[in-house]
Length: 450
Image (cartoon, rainbow, N blue to C red; front, side, top):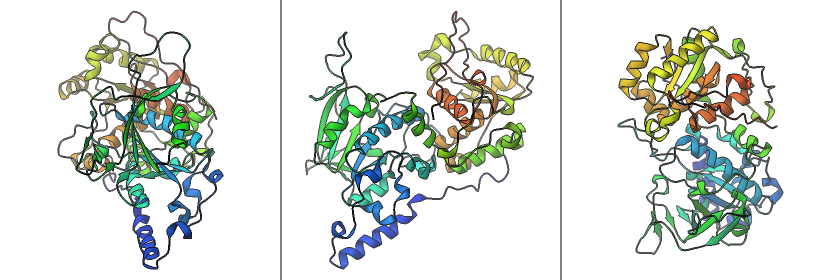
């Protein structure tokens, strides 16, 4: 591991919470009403394109703004959840046209791929993985513990559990609709003696939902906006938010939100140090200059060269049986990698994989050119499994040539990162083929829109 990476820490954006709590307490002691003291900013101030960080600190605790929370089906992975964030961000932008809303970022934790033993991986705030000020330049967002502080406690006024229609979708004209319906699946909630709803709530056991309703939904994220604007609940949670579709997939709004999802700087620094020490790769030499303010970064495709190495994402585990026909064997993957190294005259291949130990050892024997980011236990404890995955993606995003795994959201996110950095699409949208696959269709190029 590159020297100096273990001491890297991420500054906490929650440091101001104590000051805000003391401020509110002082108001109460003085017998003043926070609602009367703090002026509510106009709705226009929270329109898309304006971040909460651009307002005075006193406006950040304005009592009249409303809170949108959400969660996703527990088995869904890290990178699918990133996609759901983009969908919910579109909903927030629609709501902001009428009222002041803020998105409460759902804490990370207890995901299928996060299997490192003896490491606490629940209640993880977004700033551990992403640059929250960058998110705020697209839509107003706050961490969950900030919500607890602002809202006066761990209570959510209304929980909506989103589901499909029991009768399914009937062939014919597509119709966007939403209806209150009986719950189809067994609820992952129970009621306490106060008739409040208890559930997972991102690992916060003290959190309660005051009301719960099941909604059958068919359509894009903003289909639910009229309902939210016509209820009085100040805080609303959408559970199973993956049931909402994109408003405009691949358009300018999509890419603005995706570009705002800047990785936390401490993780990017670790990835950059690894590139420098093990792959002879730097932004200057690779023409991958990065601008911290994503709103000012607009790179022409084909200008990024990338480091002198091949990068491969080789998905294994559940994909071996779930996508058996289009996932290669270890030997098949090695054969393809050796061919690409020769074709592009490269001496190193960086591999990101979830392969078991036995498969990893086989890769090392068959691929002496292989380089991997292998963190110590202390580093995994510091960065978490999600942070290690981001470091892998960051290194893959800077390679001269990338090849991924079919229908893997991990590979999709690398495609997007390379698109943002300005790589030639021919070096990005590539995937491994199954050993017996007859027609090996390559990934679609979703061109960036500014």
